[in-house]
Image 1 (cartoon, rainbow, N blue to C red):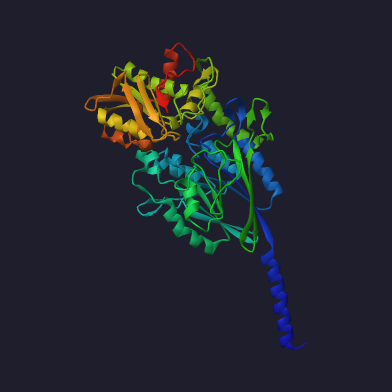
Image 2 (cartoon, one colour):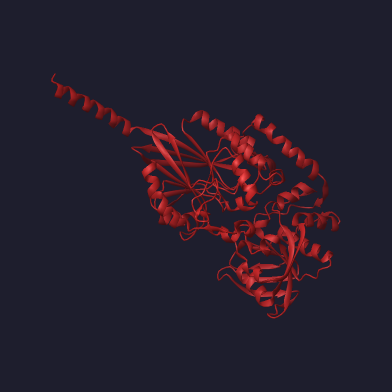
Length: 512
């Protein structure tokens, strides 16, 4: 055979095997969580104890890794702020658990700004996984020690994962800690970044904390509707429970509820450098109903459980004290949608505490999203109160004019279903039209609000600083911070009531 013929034969063989290589099909298992909110140890969630927890999650992930060659483990943010064994230690046990599980990346959520800058930097340093975000800027650059994206290389393909955080964080983040930061438009950031990533990787995943809502004009739907080239959007922020991916312009969006009670389980099949199919399901992690476990029961990883135990023991020693009894459950399920018994008593405790201090308060105003758990029936331990009110917010009093009070409730009327949905103390009567998002009637102690009168309002320090979009509080005068955490006021209020409380509402907020 001539040299030319041998060369041509070798080229043909090479092209043949190259064709086989490029036509090979690969599989990537993508596991994801969001809105973990400081739940490192199995916990009570109505109606059962012993749900979730990082030790059970570790077992689940280990089983997935044992049966799948390519596994990617991601979290879509709001890692911080929840149960006392996390909050007391600035999420140290949660980071320990995520390191043990072997997370590949965390996309920053708005509650990553619940702690000061030094605390955040320590959390990042302690994390063996990268924190990612592409649209938060400090002095024109990405945040210190935070990457805009990561590239993961597997045998036969590469995956790019980039992070985005809702620009609303400028309003919903702790004002003291987001000061000086710029939250750039999520869509504009992605439009610039995605083409760059498509040159570097076969698969592009958006790991975002934007919220999964009902229209294409906000949250992760807006991202999918306006930015082509993304293969998968993994979302957080809205704590949404879905049964199947939401698909917008061919891009699947997934979310895994919250608190580690579920883990998203997706399978991407990749051929010739492109996704050819995506299958997804939501796997419960030791979720229980009244009949028992929903789905598989995962035995807790004993090594990780041992590492977490000291945090739980320290908290238990402090917070195991019983302060009273609830005659029935104070459900938190609808606190972002309507008046609830838990919202009423939290608001009443704030007004009561400030009046006990000698301040004549007209009413208390609380954001529903600041109440994070159900109060079960039976004995009430201090620890339970810390779960209900996990944020380190003190009670403050601020004076607003009647005009600003009207503006405050006008803003509240637009927030039904959001964390900024109001809960108020006794004496307030407000009627909101859910369709028009307008206040139809508002009285304080049975009287219409006087536009020129001054009103003293008890609220948490987060709202007083303009948090959750309530910038009208910045118009206030005579600001006074009690320096007492609102959960401690709640504890004192329960004791003041004789230690026995019953869930009830009295028509403070009417939604039409």
